[in-house]
Image (spheres, each protein chain N blue to C red):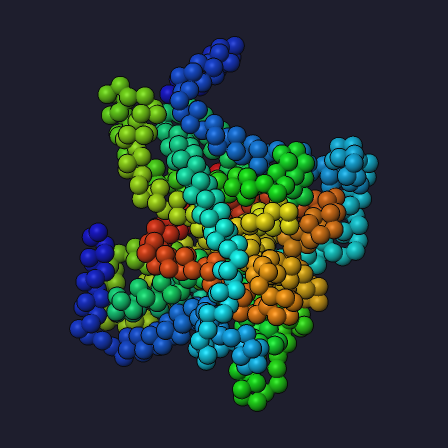
Length: 308
Length: 320
């Protein structure tokens, strides 16, 4: 807190006596930062603009920032079959269930591994950490998941593998570290068991950590396409949103399915704008939400940056 | 606690075993709290490990991994002799070096610039905009890049045609992709990586900066002699950790942008994309696993070396 005050002090006195170099840096900085920040959202804006353009206009004049003839044609085509709403429900369900279960386990583990008196903490920490040092690789993993666990075409293959990661557990441990050990001690003196201490004393103090890690997990689930591409074949109709987008963009078959039955031939489908509309619908919630939750990500990145 | 345990063990090793179960009983709740995670990592990280054996056999679907014919190092020899292993390693490492060095330079640069901005609102807005690419999936990145660069309707070509210039066809030209992929990577990651540096700059003691001001240091001198030296430890540590992952490729980025466009493989095929195709398209599990094992072993070795170095220069930050 004191540091922050000092910094404000420093910049306020800077306002009083601006040297030439300050003016140079500020001007240069404003121009460059503005340019860079715009470049970050620009590719997104041109897809947004183009998704409201008619297919014929797009094919003739190319991608453009501002739609010349505003039309909802592509969005109507995408939403009419209802497939994308089913995909939404599936994605929300997987995200909610996976984040809730994963977060509870991560919180419990993070607390236990940070307890100074727990004799197995080093062994278990290493057991978890080792998995980020050495991995079996894709082929053995794929064979295990499909042949031993029989998870081909099962949503569990998308839900389970994202539930935990060594990085998230280390992040949780770092958050738990900031809670004074005395809290646990006082709970013990009052005769509470370890689970009781965790649930009624520690968890309430972990709220910011739970928000941060929960949001990282939710983002991971929402943007998931990799496990889906490994395990969900064409026999599964409803896919998680990002993988649905992937297939709509990359395969004509999937594109046809997305706009099911509305067009007689493939060439009639407004394919370019449909792809863009799908992209916007699949990403929309994230873009609308992230400005409000980004501070949690910032705290997570700062806490987890070095050890992780 | 630990001390008592140690003396007990050294005094009477026979008691040690009993001690373990006593400990297990005493800490049963804490142990149980770890069980779900232990089971999880066992199922998804340790269980696949015996399957590495598939790298040493000629895989036969009907006979399974352990029933297939053992061929020793033949899978590795084939990959090494064809030059494939080398070109994949080279691509993966060169891309990562560019990502790490340019990524950190740009992140430090943007963090310093942002810090110099006087307006809080501007700072906040710019940071939020820079953060957007981090939140979108690699699939969308692929879509954005395609709509930016494709031959028929891409944004760049729209501009070029409007200016009366010839169209550009990057999806048929392997030589432009090293530059393009690095730019796309920087575009997606800088918002994220500058956060760490921005936080470290905010953590610099305001008194030092004020003292420099009083002594008449200008903005350039402040950056050169205070901010950069203060950032140095963070930069070094982050660089070293990034180095630990130098043989791990960014699969999502490469696969969603390049996909199965084999025209571009020469300059864009990394270990991950090759392994993915070998597994999912060719069902050549033995080759895929051989490359995967090779990558895991090199990666493991590099992390060990990096950790050793970190331990020497900054023991607090070492991983184990």
